[in-house]
Length: 164
Picture (cartoon, rainbow, N blue to C red):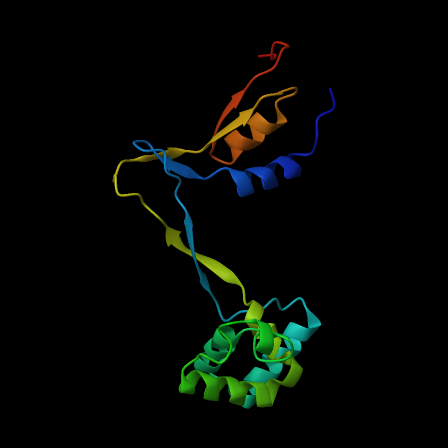
């Protein structure tokens, strides 16, 4: 048997198995996210964009206008995207002010970080139980160990007996 790194399993579980599901209907809880005003400061372009925005005194309303505009304000997007140019006049004004100050760094704020604002609940209002990870070829149990460590339930099946 060749065990594989837990990090590979962790990523798959994060992507494919909900943290919790309704104990009555089985619906998964879904993450509610909101966009922040923060950009990835490890990127030199983003760092420069933040510096320019601060120097110019751009407000959170300016950043929100940039995010509402997105990348649809120039080039081919003007021709092929159907929502282009439909923002309110005030949003357009704020975005134009920001673009004048930021130039090409304008786009950096369209990819702001997102954060968890909460989790959905289904209409059943029943308790939630951990999501279940199934490993049909359990082998050394890496997937089960990782799933349990992440607060999920886990079921493994294998032809060979699992050592206890």
